[in-house]
Length: 197
Image (spheres, rainbow, N blue to C red):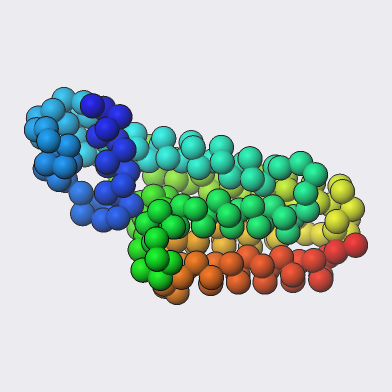
């Protein structure tokens, strides 16, 4: 039951945000009682904190795998990140043009004032970890001779992290995934033109 509650909570939190989800919604959808959900999690903040921490852990592992993939260029890593993001986007936007939220991290950043300090800290740590992961990918590209030695790693990483962290709102505003593709690919062309060997 606990894992079913968390799976449904994840889906509803992405779709409706923190304030759009209640224990009553969860209980009704799962055919159980609010008391049962309280039994497992205590309160809504505890449930959201646990769901968010699990999501961040999984997302961090998956993005680290994408950005640290050996033997491919930075542009190919960007394409791999696009594929990963597209799959997540399509789950909530199957027709491609609905403009619905699809990232729990982006959604919970909008609701940060309602989160526990631990949940807010997890969001901040995710940003730091993503920056370190992308900076390492740029260092790898430099070491492989893809970019000149003077490439400003942190500046390039900052821009890529900004795109990654804004992926959800970018696709919602544009009502399509294509705008995110354009941003990533355009940035890849700029970096290659500016710093490519």
